[in-house]
Image 1 (cartoon, helix red, strand yellow):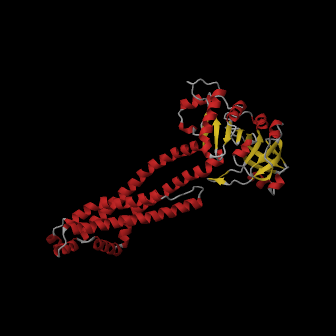
Image 2 (cartoon, rainbow, N blue to C red):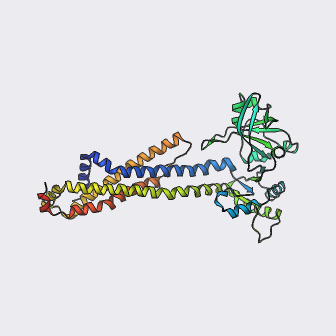
Image 3 (cartoon, one colour):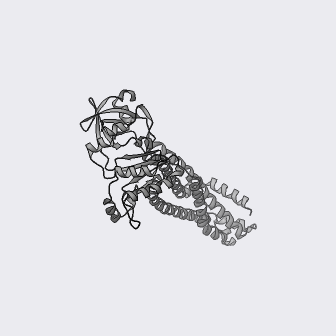
Length: 414
């Protein structure tokens, strides 16, 4: 029996028992759709973190000199204890890095953890949950801020310890009619009056979290009110990404000299770039990738067992048909091929339906939640391969059993 004839018979059998075929495929459909959806969400998150979140937090073509690494959650308790003994990054450190990198576009200082959260009050209106950051003016260049109104903070604001602020777009939008109206207005932060000097253009949301709800305060003014932070950060912006590795090495050398570290001593600081945040995220999602195969595997095995049992039932129901085929010349290979093709076709069909369902579900997740989703070709290929593989593995036994039926016994079967 040629494969084309076996395929035609398989299609006819499946069309003749649609409901049974659907329930046969249900386990594979659920497993494959789960695989496609979860992988789409994880891949989407990985891409989103790499393309958007890192730039929003660190800036493009930028790196940071920090007291502690970005991926702090990946170190053990002993390392955390040692890091707690590290010196706080100082203005002298920032000056040393700036001297070592004359080709840098910007070298800035910013307050780090813990970041104060305050209420911003304008007349009778109060906006809560606003992040307050102390910065030096180059920080605004590192973050690629564009201004909807007003001007950025400048060196005179830092030297004069002026009580002026630059606010994110959400502040102007919720407390004032327009960004232009906000400029020059006086707001109270923790009971202290500040004059709004500029409004940063809208940056939007990342994973549902707005990046427009902040206030930028000149660093000396910030430290006078909130104290010196435990993780003051130096941010460096280079002209292009290719210059970052060499610049990081030079910054590391300058910091070691500034901290008077001997060659045998470890760094008491960290030089990090966006890749560290991406690597940290990927290590977190690796746990999901470890769990997903187990869940999908269980579903595939259950689906395969269902397919095998139903195909064995089909063999029992079609015993007389098998006897007739053998009586008119079909051999064991023909019967085996017929049932194996039918099982594989069912599995592939289940895989295709599962891929379609997973794609639709991924789009629903992306549309209704902050989570991005990106369906990848390799996950689709893996899903289809799992479907076909399940049909082959679990279809062999029913096919062999059908092929070994005695034609005389089969013809007597009612």
